Image 1 (cartoon, rainbow, N blue to C red):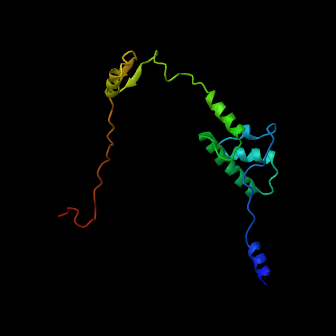
Image 2: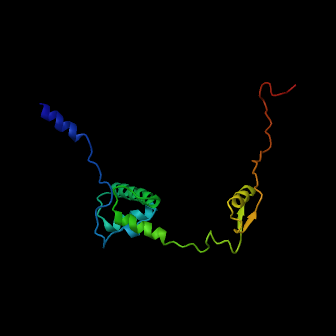
Image 3: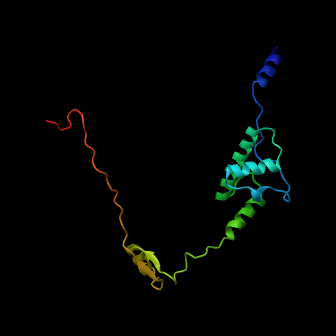
Length: 155
């Protein structure tokens, strides 16, 4: 009797879907092709894996996109270290066209307080342009007239 109840109880729950892409060897890994775009990842998963349903494919590609965004921010637990190392190396090899530290073309623009700080720390040799800070005051739109409101100042 109790065995029948347990089997009926188990049958009510749907099986859980797989939790991501299947394991691939490093040679045929789709990882370098994956992007932060859901639709692109969906097409890549269509090519590299056999997924039985559209809904499951969309779930896998959505989770893959989520993981790619997390990998971009930093190391992710449960992901192969080799993949994270590739991503980190790709970020480290990025060289900007114009260096933010190159002050020869134009001096750094600083406010008066920063200039005082630099002189106090004996960094007078750094070429800086003192710029007065602009305080942004939010503009208010025209006042609306209050009509048909009791006590709004009508005679």
